[in-house]
Amino acid sequence: MIFRRTEEEDKEQVISLWRDAQAYFREQGIDQWQDGYPDRERLDQDVANKASYVLEEEGRVLATAYISVETEPDYCKIYEGKWFTKGPYGVIHRVAVTPFAKGRGLAGRLVAEAARSCREQGAVSLRVDTHQDNRPMRRMLEKNGFLYCGIIYLTRDGASRVAYEKKLK
Image 1 (cartoon, rainbow, N blue to C red):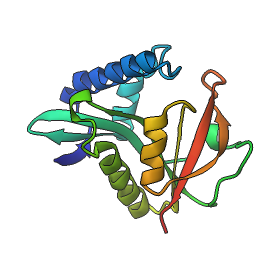
Image 2: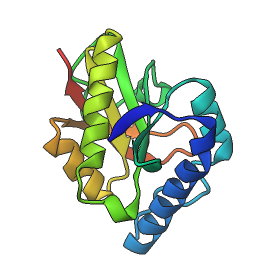
Image 3: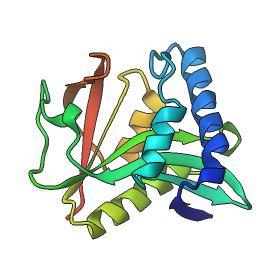
Image 4: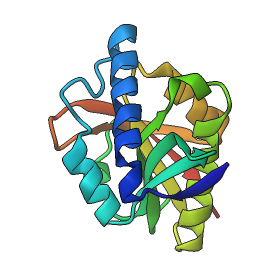
């Protein structure tokens, strides 16, 4: 299994992972990614910013995530809780795993790689958010050492999300 940055030739596979995730959310009644987000334009920006990553096995992209050390505007205000750390932090967004590889711990592997990468860049923590009803993602986060912090609101559409953080140092 190879963890690496997303390349131009990976884009169709990443888009396919996102579409599979959208279908899964729809089937489960989770109102996440049901408005066309994320889309090709978002992926183009992520790749250009060198923040899109994949897990590849035998030439096939099995999982993807956006990973970066940056200030996330949506995380500037948190409600009904607080962030545990101050200082630079990494973010993880747009996590998706191909349906046939679910249960293999690939999302956890992405989180571990994100933690390693962000720690190397000086981050003191890793932050992530997800839909309140996205139980599989919430379980994966908690299993991998993330703690619930509160509620954030997306500037994109005002939707609420549950926020988690994992200390890296």
